[in-house]
Length: 267
Image (tube, rainbow, N blue to C red; front, side):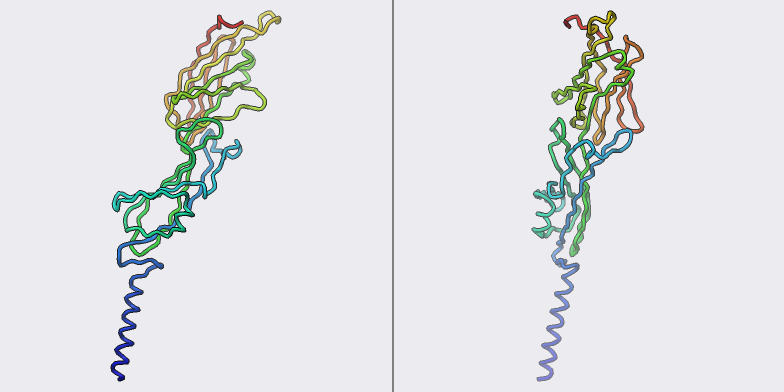
């Protein structure tokens, strides 16, 4: 009887050891699967001459619960879409060991206009069998911003200026420098072209009229940079010339001439 009793204890210990061998961090390992825990954040900075926080411009900042999640892998073949990281974590899904990519997004990458940010972030990671991969993904602004300004020198020679910014997607946005309240920057697609035209009045030569109206046209920008605030600034050295400065980031500024043509159709 003693021998049988010891055998039963030995068998129980062996079963317990086998059970423990299949557990690591609370995750089954013997079958080649593991778990993924996702943590999402949003980065609200955007590049200009100095990196700025877009919340100062009234731009929407998504909460982690508003960031849509996609889990992708080529081997094993996985393409799993979730409302957010919380829903994914709550499901506690097992995934086969392999290389995965987690992507968080918010907004529409093709949308353009005021307060139309598009956030996107991607993180690639390895999932090892029997472990839980802790993954943090930061979603950053992925589209571009644009706005039009004039310098004090331009305003000395021209007044009542209005400009139209056109994007390669076919959208148009009007800017009136000096307006109250000031025009807000607009979000445009990353990689889109931008052309700018406008009208302004030169100073009156007689003091009895508004001055002649002129049409302004500048060379287009071929492609906008993602996560960058593009500031188009019109400057002037005299009443017969104008220059457009395009500030892209702290290291780059583009300058182009502006065509000025008397508007014969103006009243």
